[in-house]
Length: 329
Image (tube, rainbow, N blue to C red; front, top):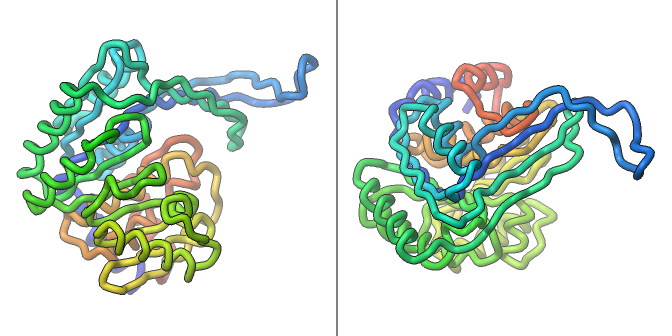
């Protein structure tokens, strides 16, 4: 298959309907230039030139789905604080999405501040409260997700370990999805993948896979072995493992494997690249693509987004251009 063969699929992405549930956060970027080292301590002095605030975490999945023209239902929780209010306004400002951003009084909305000079990230400072949701709020979130299942072919669970999926939330949402014949794509966190039992597709990176499987992942064979161990243990349909400069490996429960070479010529920032991958995977599956086709398209999208600075999205025109610039995959 050539890259260009996937272009018709890009055009079909806007026909997909995707449900996204996950941990929401605010990404704050402080850009400037470094010209000297501080006399107070051996650290660079950043002369601030501009600042930017964008949706992060599951919010970046929403941004990517929106950029692709996908009809989306979005469900998450923030704190009842200034960052939470700002996030709610950003979600509403995107338009084209059914959004349910619940609010918990006393909760601290996750805020990640990154200091950047040129294309180099100097420091990230996190302000957050990663705690489980109270029972009543968790029940509201699960009910909203369950009710939305009947109208969506694909559900994304974007887990950033901030509390949305603590307890049985993930299991209940996955069970509801299976009952509604809705495909479940998960961006996982943590070492216990049993909470995602029965999901159709997980997208860990190589380090996350190693931690969850407690197995070495230094070679392709070891990655496949670790993925198969988790697939067998938890009834997953497949795993798409991001391996950085070594590309991606798709490992299916039926025994099939697919190696995808890294597409990026230059890598400036991997922040949010996983969000782009799960977004394109979900949109492609929602548009009727096979798992292999969805993985190939997501790999191409990753090559586009890591060449940008900051938490970025991929536009359909950029994806099509990337597909035309490479002959084969």
